[in-house]
Image: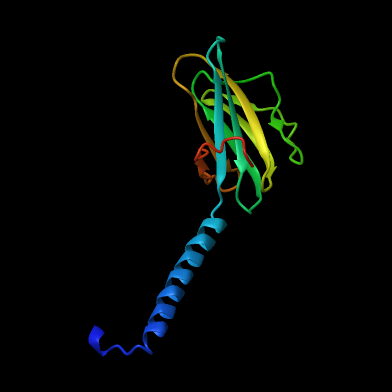
Length: 156
């Protein structure tokens, strides 16, 4: 581009085009981020007890509601707590008992609406923390879980 040939009258048009491209780019990226299903999680582990207790809290940060989910705590020594699934209103938890298997325990979540927070509890022995996964019961597709960022844990 020959900058010497650019007329002073053309400069505002170039600036307008650059601002439009930047605005479109920001809008496009923000739209994709808002459409992506995001479920945040946090964990609390009580190591003073034997077996150890793990509580995993999930929070739906997306605008999308999820239905028929399975939350699994995976590990050979993982069992369910005697504590029912916790929730913060307006959310409600399923009264179905957790399914215990040889590879861990799974919880049925009938629905997870935007901004709903649910807490699952398990116990395990050994020093290795259980793995956990949230997936769609019908398709078996995992849903991405993210840790809270910027020290905003507990804020909704």
